[in-house]
Structure formats: structure tokens, C-alpha cells
Length: 203
Image 1 (cartoon, rainbow, N blue to C red):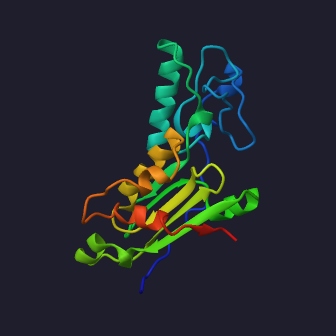
Image 2 (cartoon, rainbow, N blue to C red):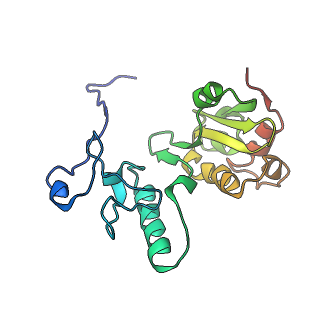
């Protein structure tokens, strides 16, 4: 590959310094993010902070979920919390990346017993048919509960396929539910049960 320029994104700074938050008594942290509790309330009663300014996600989907949390608590008497949210995101590059939960490094650092599965996108019929075989799938599973800890899918459809694992994580169901499911052929999703049938201890 050749290129003429390299773009590096090295972080974000919240645009909160000109909002007069100090005059309103709304606390911010050392980086300028508005401090909120688990239901997105600020330090001032009846004031909530949603979206990028609270430092709780900085994605469109997390900002919208912030809205859902506030509406549920404020209008629907439905206790929802930021801490219930599972970290997930997509990078819309070529090939796309879908990520959810813990990384392999985070699982290792946690010291918990875990299982890992990996598969190359070259093993996926749909990827071969589309001549888009770059990438891989990787899953991490708690060895005792059999629940997913995290996953990464870099490859065609990865930004969509990751949702099947995300949904299992919210449901707190064991990986065997997907492993025993019948997936449509030819799709990218169909290799997930195969990968789950070949899990190995994370060493």
C-alpha cells in the first residue's frame, strides 16, 4: 500500500468551556466533561447532560442511548442506568470492524479464566464469494459462566454481525445458544457457531 498522507486522531476535548457551567454550578472533571451520575443527572437538580459532553461514550449510538436513559427515568418511571450499557462500536473502514465488550488484553489483565476463539475471514464462504477475505473473527468467553466477555469482527459484515454477540451479552446467555443455532448459508454469521465449537483456553 502507498499513500501521501497519514491522519492521526489522538483524542477529543469536550466543547464545554464556553457554556457558563461554572455560573450554573454544574461540575466538570479535569478534562472538561460534565460530571453525571448513573442516570445522567448533573450536580445541579433537574439538569441532565447527554451525549459527547459527559464523556460516557462519544458515539451517536451512546448519545441516543443517553436520551433513552433520561426519558425512561424522567417520564416513564423506568430505572435505566449508564452502567447497564455494554461498550460496543463500529469502525466503518475497509474492511469494517465491529467490537463489543472486553479486549483480549483486558481479559488477560482481569485474571479470569477465559476461552478464546479465532477464525480468518478466508474461511467464510460469503467473504470468498465477494472476494473480501481480509480480516478475522475473535471471541472471548468466561470459562465458568460460558457468557461472552467480548468480541471483534474485522471483515465484511463485521459491523452488523457483531450485534448477534452483543444481544447475547445483554441477555446474559451462554455462548452455546449461538453455537447450537442454525445459521443461514452463505452468510458471514454462519462461521460464529463453528468458531465457538473450537474454543481454547486463553493462556
